[in-house]
Length: 539
Length: 61
Ligand SMILES: Cc1cc2nc3c(=O)[nH]c(=O)nc-3n(C[C@H](O)[C@H](O)[C@H](O)COP(=O)(O)OP(=O)(O)OC[C@H]3O[C@@H](n4cnc5c(N)ncnc54)[C@H](O)[C@@H]3O)c2cc1C
Image (cartoon, rainbow over all chains, first blue to last red; front, top):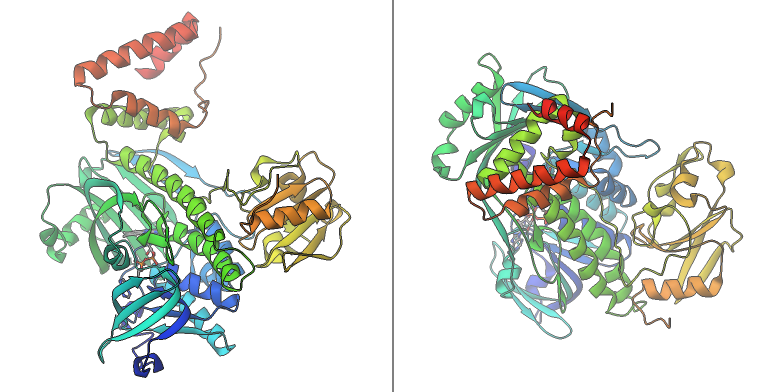
């Protein structure tokens, strides 16, 4: 059977641009149809911005790569109309076990907080994730949205100018030139765009190799994340077992630094390792094997004039903590509304600088977390191994040591504290919904809050008098008026009011809080909208 | 007799762990051992209570 990732899903087709006498100029060109490029394309198309997506192949990610998708990206995909198929297909899990040597030292349950539509995370192969994005693109195209996805279009040169970018693209029928007002480089960790523009990508390389194998097996392992430190079947190293849909299991085996990658990847070497782990009697089939070294690094700036970098091209993390694709989807979420408002002239170009500051802040948080996990899993000095082993030893008996065990901290969204788009916090409300925070979900009526917010600026008013909609800077801001009377669970109050009786939140199109007040005040809200659009505001 | 607290009590445990590793960075084995010994003595002094310290010794064994 041909695997989905071996199928040409958007085969090369000749574009009219290839026959144009002078290069055609597009408002937005995206390089790369990975999870990040596809998400931005969908988001921009929703906002009425036509996009051209160029990818050097015509299929989804070969092998699964990312498998763990967190709540916040799922909420973003809900906003974009494709969260449900992912959750339906994905495996929801929240239990895990940690082993040290031959001992099972403890179990955990990451029981997610109540009152959210989406689980803390699901496991789903990256190729399915991309497939669902492609399906969403097909639906949007059928609705007349302009997403021009071009397979086997490899960008071979990029030229930057003050007000546009020129591209040279290779195709099976030869090269052509095309131009863009804005270029979004979502061309992955090895970003050719970054290289062609001679830009930096600094950080830390971890001197370690991991064998990543996806195996298909009918096994009665539970739907849990199992993590081993120093197991007998992989002495001195670590191992991970995690379930994906369709009876596919992810296995990660740490191999150390001095290995022969080509040798280790051969099935005759992989299979005995897996048998040692799974037991001789378990029948499995290799779906995909790869060997990885990990790096944690980022570009100094994600915006270079008319070129914006998003996803792995801008930042790279080790996979412990599942922050790669998850954070790239958040880049898309942050960038799309800003670029759409700059393109239609509503917001100044300066708004795009906030993309750089906000997402660089996110990248730093992700790099810090995944670096720490990697340091715990692969101690780099004798002292750190001694501490690591002490923590593991103690955690078998004593609860206090368990929070110190770090086999990956699962991806949570960052709060854009200190962003220039935030207005000063004017509500004595809960810290979790302060300006800059992603809106926490909460049950309301027979649904959930986030699905009511949509994808434009909105006011969320709770027990506060306010008009149904206001206009500020040419933007219509709809009011979503709620009351604690419709909040039987009390979670809306706990997450948005705290001890206050009423609140008025200004929420950005990416569902982050821009400002909050105890009551409606048209002038203050208009100022907050200006600020959130990156405009000058008098103090 | 006060009981030794063995439940999670460290504010931002990942930060503490990173601080510990940073303190040991670049030290030789002897220097690391000496640092750990000084640290134990400082923390023991802060705790003060001999009963608690005895329980801690027993838990660590
Ligand atoms: C083993 C492993 C496990 C992982 N696990 C997780 C996880 O559990 N959760 C998670 O969130 N992340 C995880 N990740 C990270 C995740 O896979 C990446 O972060 C994610 O793929 C980045 O998406 P992207 O769209 O930025 O780049 P990519 O997926 O790399 O896509 C880049 C695209 O650009 C195209 N391209 C490149 N050059 C050109 C060119 N010149 N012209 C045209 N097109 C071009 C490529 O063909 C490709 O389609 C994992 C990664 C690995 C390796």
